[in-house]
Length: 336
Image (cartoon, rainbow, N blue to C red; front, side, top):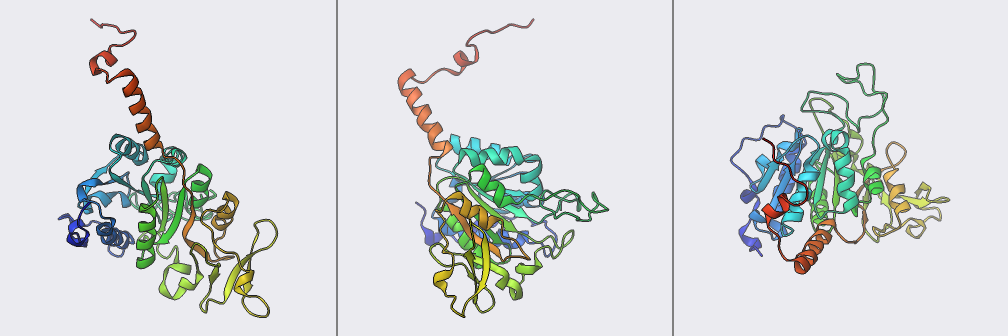
C-alpha cells in the first residue's frame, strides 16, 4: 500500500501539453481525476487508463500512470484483457458518447453484462467533437449538425437506461464542472467491486456549447436531484420540492408544506430492485430534475475473478501446459 501522504495531484500530471480546446469540460474531469487518485492509496504503477478514440480519449497522455490509447470503441475489450491478466491493477476506461455508444456499443454492453471489475467514465457531450461536430447517439432528436443539417431524426440513447439494462452493478452520474460532486462520485465508483459506469455530462463549447445549461451552471444546480442513499428525494432552490410515488413506480413532483412532509417522499435506495433505478433514469428535464449521484449499486461476482478461479482450478488439475504443445494441438497443416 502506498503512503497516501506522499502522493499529490502533481504526481499524476504528465509533461505533455494538454491539447483540448480552451474551455472544454475535459479539463475539469482531468483535474478531478488527478485530485482523487492520490486518495485511492494505490501506487501509480498499479493504475491503468484505457481509452478509445475521441477528444476524451487523449486522457492517458495526461495522466502519469500506465495507459493505452486503443482503437475506436474497443477500450472495454482491451480493459477486460488487462484486468483478467493482472487483477491487482486498478483499471479505468475513458470514453465518449460516440466512442462508447456507437461503434463501441457491443463491447460496452458485454463489459457491463460480465461485470468486469473496472471503472468506466463516459464523457457525454452529445456530439462528435474530434471529427468536428456530427450528431452522436446521445444527441437530441432534431439536432442540427454537419451530418444532420435538417435535424437528426434519431431517438437518443439514455446511457443510464442502457447501463441498467445491460446489468451494470454500479451506475452513477455527475457533471464535469461540479468538482466536489464529481470527485465523490469517482471515489465511490472506485470502491465498488465490479463494473462502475459513470456518465459525466461534459460541455463541448465549440460544437455543442450549452447542451446542459439547465443544470450545469452554478445558478441552475437547483435543477439537479442529488441522490444520497437513505435520504429523501429533495431538490429546488430552497430544498422545498420532492419526489413521491404515484401509482406503480410513477414519479410525481410535490411541494413540501400544506400537509406534505419529507415522510411522504421517496427515500433513495441504491440496492432497490431494478424498476426503481429505471424510474430514476427516466426522469429528465424539463419535466423532472436531473438525478445525479449513484443510482444503483449491487454486489455480485465479477468476470475477472471467476476467470482467475477457473484458471487456477484447471491448472491445479491438469498442471501448467506448454505453449508450443497448445499451438500444435489437434489438426495442424504444414504449408509448403
